[in-house]
Length: 226
Image (cartoon, rainbow, N blue to C red; front, side, top):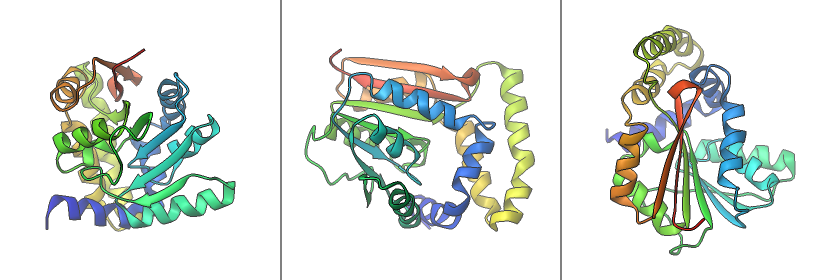
């Protein structure tokens, strides 16, 4: 099975437990991180925003509260189904659609900014995904898990996460999914390594990386004008 299809099926299967997973991976703080991330992404008051890998819509709903017209995109049909239900409960106007970051169905620079929260590491071709994000938006903001630079902190964090895998396997019947997500967080290029990949695949003038919680995650931005 191709990696992309494995990831799509995996997210469909764990969609009902996805928010719980992020609670564990972020040591219970991802909601605070997301609020800080949205403040960064909306610093220049974007009017039209694309939220890719939108999942169950957390970031999309916060963006909407900031006054943006938001489109939420995810390649997991069940994630989008959950997001639409949540949107209906909130009387939200976010437009949720199924789609692939590697082949976005939008015009060049159609959006003021594009956001990706905890999803870019799951894109099959990171290079192609970044090129598409840079094509459709005037700026990019990405929040993604990474690795703490302190070796003791890094080892303790990932050891703790792996201790949860058997528990999640019993709850979701997809222990392999949690093993994959933890391993992908541990191996994904972060901080200056990811910035280098962004520079190589987009055409912005400015790039920035901000560590979160000691490097458990990073907020990345790319833009051309202040």
